[in-house]
Length: 242
Image 1 (cartoon, rainbow, N blue to C red):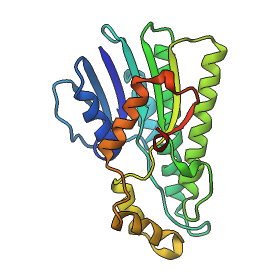
Image 2: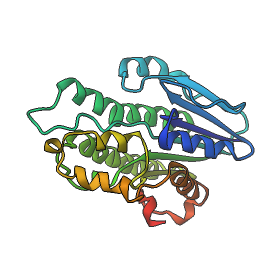
Image 3: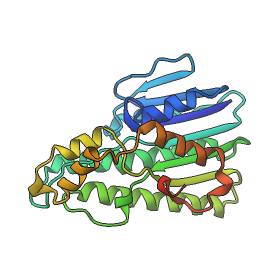
Image 4: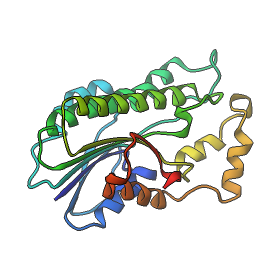
């Protein structure tokens, strides 16, 4: 049996990933989001607000448990937020905390417990953090998103290094950027004020010109990596390159 733990399954890339996994035989998907939008006999929903770190700490010990006949165990940290698109001096302090809680603290906690629970398993294990191209460069108005994705990339690099140091085999760790995808986040970007984000018109043109990728096509790319990890040696990956 292949088990997939996926966060943010109510919509967008997370939902597409879950639906793609469920098309395969002998798969079980455990999805995490505040609302349930998938109904399937092999889908288990965990209603959880991942930006509420106190709640996550209380429940995380029950998230990962002993699995029946696992051949592959996958964690995909997909849930994330763009945060408050404002320049420094104008950002809502509460949104700063929320952005980093959802984008970096929650994935770190889930990574910690996933590795703790399954590092000795005989199954193939894959941990994927959904990264972003902007983890590598600065974008005005996106301080929280850029910084939290950069931090997530480094968390992933450290986890991979530690598994290597411990000689844990058959356990791959990746930070994978999805490219520009037609999700609610893109809608939110197009709704911000131009004085808060100088590239607004460029992002509006992505929608107008049909340049946004479909979430299901993006999910296929992620599963190509999952099914062929031997082709992907580096921790940091970008689906636009394969």
